[in-house]
Image (cartoon, rainbow, N blue to C red; front, side):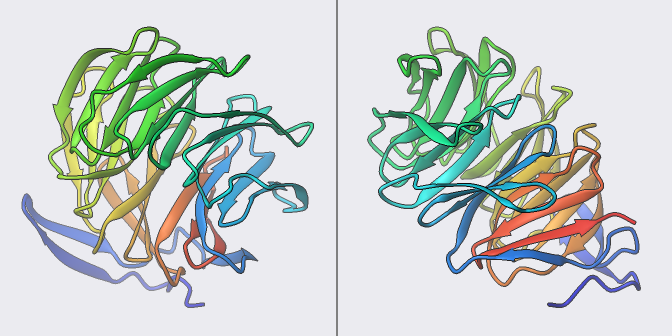
Length: 317
């Protein structure tokens, strides 16, 4: 595996807004470390808020590891077909996964068992997210809908059908509103109690692959198929900066717990780190598309999962 060189080399990228200088390598981040290798592609990664559990969505199961020891905690035979997405509740007691079998599955991470299977989508499930209090779970699907479920009994609380194409990103702003994005290129905000549309704004990209809300609730980031990462004011959905650098679709996103740093992964096999709107690192290491990212709670280590089956980590010096 080729690590990040200690000598900083910059590459000039010509963007629509002007010249962007990319630090091709940085002394701040160490070399990529291979933490674990899987024989099958990894499609998603999630880390609990306290950093104690790491989840990986693979072709055949959901692998739950104790972190940082990586000792196996659970292997959940999740979906009849491959798992596609994964999320933990804020307290880490529950996990949710979506799959190509059109279902959402809710798991008890302490007892390591399936709580319930949620049916209703008519397309592959591409995104899942818990409300802050974990009483609600949202799922986005290739059927163009976002469905909201009560985690206590699995009943459907609402269904939002505002998108015209597959939905690949969803996040709760609070217990009453959520935001979503998809391949219709529109970011939408809606009320979860009755699925009422509140506002929407074009993302500026034809297709959106992922969405992340900063922990402080101020910024919304969207990973686009055109390789850009697009920032919005999370409160108003007003467009902000467009971050350019990926040489292929941007696929996944993660903020640090203090909301300062943003990481993006792409089909160009790189992870890129941004400080506000400033690019600070390009991190190679994967041999295929990057599919999941997470920072540890202290923001010093960045974890990534790839379609090459590799779980990698970089640590700031």
